[in-house]
Amino acid sequence: MSFDTILTETSEGLLTITLNRPDRLNAWTHKMGSELGEAIAAANADDNIEAIVITGAGRGFCAGADIADVFQAQQQEQPQAQQKDEGAAAERPIMRNWVELVRESKPLVAAINGACIGVGLTQVLPMDYLIASRDAKLSLRFIKMGLVPELASSQYVTLRCGFGMANELMLTGKTVSGEEAAAIRLIDRAVDADELLPAAREMAKAMGNNPQSALRAVKQLITVNAAEADVAVVQKRELEALERCYTSPEHKEAIAAFLAKREPDFRKARKAG
Image (cartoon, rainbow, N blue to C red; front, side):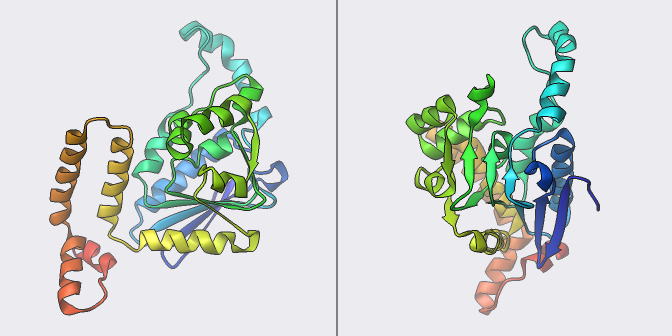
């Protein structure tokens, strides 16, 4: 599968996706969003792939939306959009479906290697683990453009950093380094630049080596229960998921491997099941 704005590489059950517009610091375009969605969906359907790492080519991870591709086109579309809904920006299918795709996907780890601005950052916030180089630059600078953050980031930043820090980041549009981002828990870890991809791949493998059916069930529980106020509902969802897991080939393989004192082969179990 070949793409125009991203590169893909598969090795040892791990898919690495590289945003590949280095001359533009990998600025996001609608085509890039579409190709990312296509690559992740294909990986989710491929039993040989167990986890995904996303990084950027060159000096940046993703320096936000490409002004010419996104905002200029949106300005041209605005009169037509206003006829349908006064004052509303034209919606794009990839933007509406991105968070759902990420939360239903196999484990996704972001390796943030440089500038990670605007949509460059909001697109990775729903992912399972975020690692950045210490000198990466991260910013939710939508306010500087007279805009609001999207992709459910107003929820994800608050869940990650807390109410006060979410306000500070979003209302000032300030830029923080990778090291600062880790300290405030906007991301999960900061490492030296030469350690970034190895660390991201190690984490992705640590997640992906587990039973895929349970991985997706856990991700779904985290997604729906993170903001659930009713503990009884939380437990009900967990019990329902647990009952489904009991019948999965991977759970049965885990039990058999434990009793036989051997390493489980979850991939073989999935294919047999």
